[in-house]
Length: 206
Image (cartoon, rainbow, N blue to C red; front, side, top):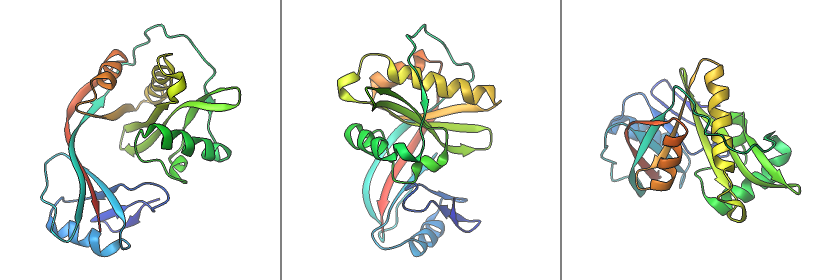
C-alpha cells in the first residue's frame, strides 16, 4: 500500500498517516515534504530524537514506549465471542475510534487486516487489530473499548487474542503506549509485554 521511493515511503491518506525514512535526516524529510500533498499530516516514529526542518509545522512530539511479547500470558479472563471485522463494519469502527481515540484509524485502515471486535446487541463495543508488519514483528493497534463497557476485560481479551494469533504464526507482537499511560502499561505487562525501548513520536504537517 506504500507510496514513494526506496528512500522515503508513506501510506495513502485514507489508510494511515505514517511515513518511513530509510535514513532519518534533513534530506529525507525534504524528500517527504516534496512528495506529499499540501497540509498533509504525517506521523514519524523514530528511535532517535530528530530535528524537524522549519518548512514543517510541528503538531505534537512525545516519548512513547515500544513493547514486545514473546510469550503471551493468559490471566484467566472471561471469554466473549470475538468477531472478525470487515469493511461493512467500518462505520462502527470509525465511530468507536472517534469516541475513544486509540490512535489513527481512517476509512481504509482496515486494509492492514486482522481486525477483530466484540459486539453487544449489534453494537461494536470493543476492537483491536494488526497494523504495521516489519519483518517478523507485527503491531497490535486500535485497541479500544466503548466508555459504557470499560472495566470488563474486553481490551485484554482482544490483545491476548491478537498476540496469540501472531505468535502462532511464528512472529512477534509489538505495540506502542504513551510513556505516561500507566494504566495501559500495567495491562500490557500483565499480558506478557515488556518494554523494548523508548521511541520518539513526531506528528508534523506540510
